[in-house]
Length: 122
Image (cartoon, rainbow, N blue to C red; front, side, top):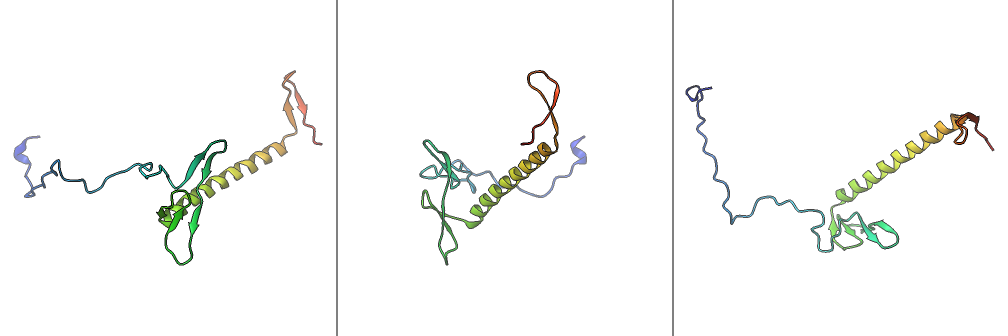
């Protein structure tokens, strides 16, 4: 394609920001907090990851993180709780399906001889 068929638009672009200007948006990781608190869970020796407790005060529009005492947006907490409930619900459905599948079986393969044997229903 030749340049004689291309017409330039009468638009001048802004100059990029110089090195001293801060960017408009800055992405920070979720561990950027003072304590390293992600407001979801934290590690306790011997117990593993423990969920954070949230404090709700009547008449206030924010929620407080029980670990680092930071004020949190309620939608952030609601999204965390909805995600956990969805995961629990899916695990429960898988469990119910698996139990139904096992209930319908009447025979299984023996580990020792490799033949099909009846399942004992005591």
